[in-house]
Length: 427
Ligand code: LLP
Image 1: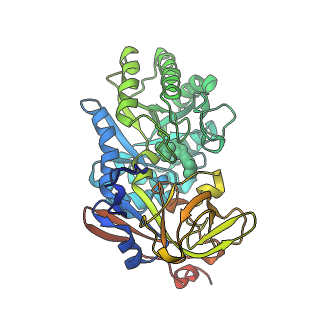
Image 2 (image 1 turned 180 degrees about the vertical axis):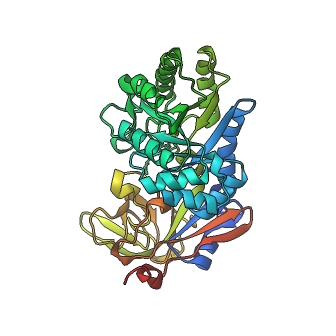
Image 3 (image 1 turned 90 degrees about the vertical axis):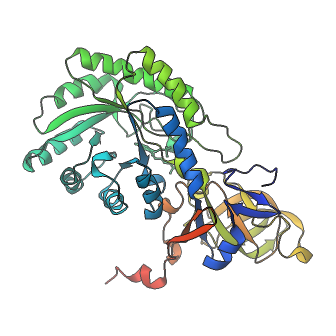
């Protein structure tokens, strides 16, 4: 691969001016399967997972893939086959994990608004733990468990009130967030939970935010949570597992977050020092397992030049890759062949790369310098997490197809949604 290091390297990069994912030329995939198309590198996912596995070698620990990042069955199967547990947030996600071959007893159920029927389904499936986010939820889980003649394993999500130093929409560990139980109320809530007959206290959990690129917010969260465990256990309530959530960031535009291995080596020092090294450790990574493993391929429909702005209008849109519209997020966007296809008509210009959706917010990249022609294809990088899983049918656009790439093999894991698919549920 060439010297230019793209997010997703070494699994994504140029070879002889052609953008490759593993051993496959992405321009061939775009031609064969059409665009917009998501392509994921299996080796990139497994290598990201390996970082965590390495850090946890010899420890009592389990990795629960936070499947909201990418819940396609083909992706879930990769993680299920690699022995991962799963972090779910809905009955729909529960059904997907089970369909992909994940084990119920390795599932933890997060989220602030679990419904009674979701709680019942999860209890019946026999999941590992409910991560409870409020006192009223505690009561509802207790009630549902008692009426089903079961005991629900629970953990309380505590809000450590630390600043994850990330985008406000994806920061979740501060006091004013809707998530978790305030640090100051945690002990009281544990005491109450211990009196409810339908519940069995298993653990404690926190998740301070997403796209975190520094170690220090995690260190703060770990020590705040361990302070709580000290006082909870001093009150005679035993905590089996400590769940520190997900949140580790990836490279979108040159960020250099620590690797999972480096992060956890550091955190284990702290955990060991505090005497909790023998406890079962859970994590819930999403983005750091899949984000840099995926790209969205899109083709240029029109080039519209203007006095103030040039627009590169492509066939992917905010319904496929919603992160720029939602968070003003940056995704690198690169051509599938470095020389551009229509060389004769090429000039290098600065464009806003936009989709066909009727919204000014429908942009994918701003002020990008490209040397391209109509019909050329581009790759939106770092698109493995929170793109397909947040996609929609806005403007009655069918969702993209997806392929999984493994060395030189390309497997279709989701066919493109048709107009018929879109109308199927309507009566
Ligand atoms: N655990 C819990 C309880 C969570 O709420 C989340 C993500 C995760 C784990 C996984 O976090 P990760 O390792 O992926 O950072 N749509 C936003 C991200 C929202 C994250 C929501 N919670 C984005 O595109 O940036």
